[in-house]
Length: 254
Image 1 (cartoon, one colour):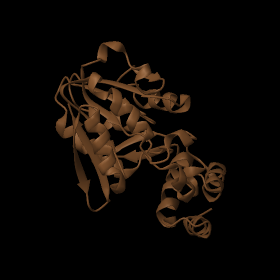
Image 2: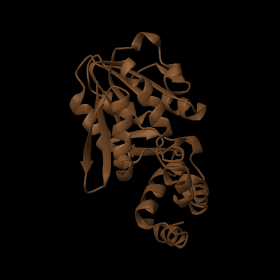
Image 3: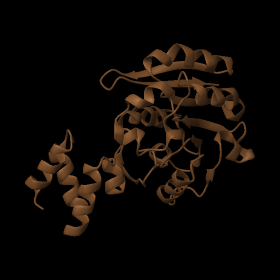
């Protein structure tokens, strides 16, 4: 199958960036049989990153396995913001870590940084352990703070909390490749999209070091409520916005 044929198949399946996807599939497939299998999966609706087995995020290539949340390019604002705040030798906790991409990008190249990551989904934990194997061995399976080592209490400089924030009723309107192929727990934020953040905000201050901060994303309509619940948790929130991508990162300091 040549590039033109593959592009035609992808475009017929509704792939908006068919030519670029054809480039990536051709580059990744080791042989014709593998290419056919990969093309068939993509045409059937599997996310391109699941088909390729990796995602490129903030200049880093991370492994992505089936069912695991694919890191979004819009979240690069969160990691860029976090990197400006992290000091050498600091401690980073990545809750709901998924592939581990956020912690990896934030901690890379920073001497002496301790990175701890957790996720509820065993598939995500296995994926994160693979991606973070050269950075940290502290990747744990568990519900939010329940899996975090107790010695981190009061010592976390940056708490990355890329929690699910899609309101339950809006999940039906997400693209099929997300709502069908990614774990529901990685998307569903409850009735107002803030259920998981509410739980994080209730405990975050106790885990943060003096001067530490929590970073999370929220939709524009959620910002007032997100700020209010973070203030109720003893934190001081502000919002960092990228107008081009319409991304909003809430930074809540202790």
